[in-house]
Length: 386
Image 1 (cartoon, rainbow, N blue to C red):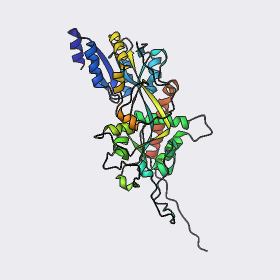
Image 2: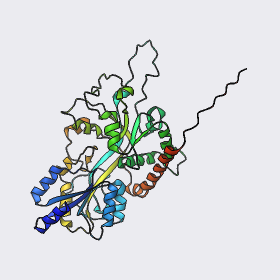
Image 3: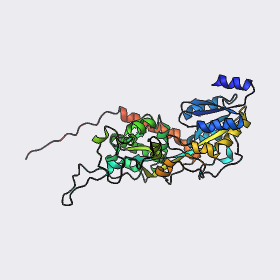
Image 4: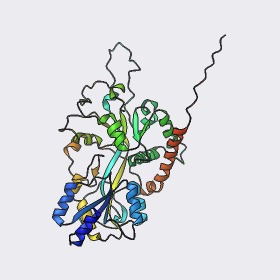
């Protein structure tokens, strides 16, 4: 792609180079419309992870490898701003933004966001019918419907949940940010610190997966499309763990995950067997910026302007359940039917940016200690006969 970009430039065609990572979705049809309207080709380079993007920008300051960077998230806003990896650029005609996304001095421009939340399988938590004159069978009763992150700190739920590992998954770090807010690692005598909670959750059977894609689309039971999963919530049959074929009914996802699943159906379904735990969600913004020292900074600015226009904003939602940064964009049919509005925690980019890598190291140590620690000894019972 780099050779093609150089060839285009040498022949007089305008081109703007964009660097992003594999988890950030760029709507291809919108970019094609940008090229048709402006004559500017968009050449996209993808790194594997957000960390790779940041590292490449940092190493190539003297000779920038791109004109625009897209997909910077809340975790890295502080590093990008403090190290001057982007230059200030105010979009020419900004639309109304979702509250709390703007970055000071226009060092980065909001493009989209997610509300990361727990998701669960409603049919698993249905209490089976029984005659009124019979006592319930406690072995058949499901755990209560999860109400927040503290459900993971409950032996009734921990063994039925799957989450992404914060060491290998960005979505796992977002969960870590939410845990740190509720259970600070330090300076709190009122709550149990999250490292202790994580250790206990692992001992109760919480499942860690290396990626969010694996935990949600392979291990979470809500990923099964109809007709294999029940879709009617009017009178669903109770579902047990054995019915789920090894999958689990509770996972760390997003408020947009039900809408994402709806897009994969052959038509707009009447209902889906997936729900959102609306408490303890965390909002993560995604940003674009003109790279500092970019050779085509004027073209980069034109692309940043375009990313705020309705055509691009409407197409920015992706399989993770992202939402456009503009607050006036009409939702898709799937979002109108299944999208969930939450009141999330909005982390301070300065505080989170200064601490999240240290939290990640602590998380890694807790997981490593759990995996290498010997199993606890079986209790010895001594019976003394009279």
